[in-house]
Length: 248
Ligand code: 0FX
Image 1: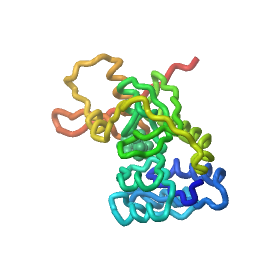
Image 2: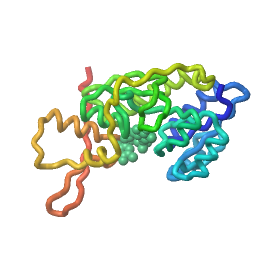
Image 3: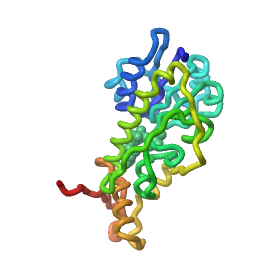
């Protein structure tokens, strides 16, 4: 069983839900510590979490050594920092990923799932030296509808992450879980792919279906994602989609 568990995250809402599940599933002798990346707003986490919160920079060798010396399990909960090799080789590191590995590795998986018409889900896996790549502990698909946007699909994926973690927290904390390897290398999309997707080329010829899919994939609450460049002013003009199915 793991004794000193570190959660590292950049997503306060998800952390609040996981804190509850972790506390329900831990044994008395298991210590759980929460931490955030230096660029995260720690006060957002303080609002949500009962536990004390550390700030840890995975690019800082002292911070990485501190983790290696003090913890035997690191849980990455939408942590935006890349885990260095020395960390994953010395401490068991487990990631909760908002995509179905290996189909949706990388950044904002639901965006690329809508745009490239790929299945989507959530995965809990051991971290190795490649992004969203290691042995899988649990994964499940979520339903994707023709009228989903990134925003509506993301909510379903978060629910699935919580569901998967609720089902596996006990065996993860006890270190009695089993794993299986991903079938292949799958697909990987990075932040740059998202930034490129956001720019709409007004001269590109496409089908109505593909354009709707692109705008659905870039519509997420109030985020200003998709844009074209106004020819007169040279300024970005942001676009998002209002989409809803007819009532029965
Ligand atoms: O915490 P998270 O949901 O997850 C992201 C990556 O998607 C994930 O692959 C990685 N493992 C994790 C560490 O970081 O990211 P977020 O809270 O910044 O964004 C949540 C969603 O909001 C995102 O999936 C798409 C949407 N979004 C976010 C930003 C900042 C946008 O549509 N536009 C944006 O500018």
